[in-house]
Image 1 (cartoon, rainbow, N blue to C red):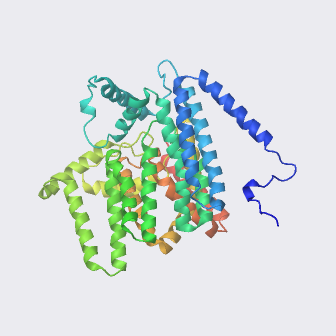
Image 2 (image 1 turned 180 degrees about the vertical axis):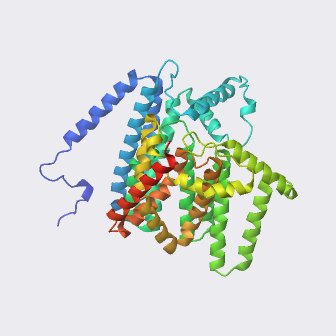
Length: 457
């Protein structure tokens, strides 16, 4: 009689030895220990946070089947490594006597400076003297940076590291969205694309709130996709809960997402022939919009004029050909909207981007190439997964309208929050358009000719 040996206790195949692997692991651990002993405190802190975060993220991947977990772990690890390399290169390349913390993006200086002043106030009770800059709801990222500085000290590299970890987290989340909407293959393709997508990598290595906003919105979208598949109260909470912090980061995003969820619920109610809940939702959303516009709804005319003035005063971004466009009436906004919408789709024009922002130029070219496939994939998913995609479509439309009007075509990094869904749509459309080279080539030539003609001079 023989006793079966458990698989994990069986001897390794002949010719294989664990000794080199164990020796390599011990050597790496010894080298890391020596490095951390002599490294600056900021680097030690960043390394410790990375080790803990990567361990937790790796453990979370084990909730997936092995067939999905293994390629996704490779994509997650590679995407994280790429982001870390870019972060350190960009950080140390930007360090100078006038910029000792290696900041790059313009808004990063504001988040870092105000965050450190607030942290000093919290730690030592020093008056920040910036009360006029700390009024309103959309200052959540300032306080997030301040909270990190309060605990860890003035370590901007740590804030960048947190953004890098959130950006790497977009890889598995994008896979889940793609898998639920279009299958495993589309999910892995979209995860691969976002792991190396130049603008996503570029904007995630700065002290900016766009990565956190993208991460929260994608979590909320996954919650809605789960609710559309199996309506439950807890999945509805999962669709709303992650978006609530947006009130303190980008308040209009929360409003737009709530309206988008209401649109999805309205569609479900109509499909189920529940007219009363559908009418109640419409009235509730209308009341919320009226209240948000003004505490006194009867003053709509004044609010309308104020809205037009605010939109006109915001002006276009410096890289927009429409930066000098102004509005004097609502009609001006409606007339400009198609131009602003088209400008957002092609933001930025690669030949108008500064050399220091070349990842945005590369991302724009890649986006132009994938745009036809994204349109095909979007139309397919909207046809077969309408309930799951309605909030995403409504949110995207409302946000695009705002960016098209307020920023005269948008700011390049605003594309960040759209990329997970854009890449899922593109991954869905790729296998559905086998004879694509000729029409894409002709479309690309037509686009370049028209864009150069419009932007000449």
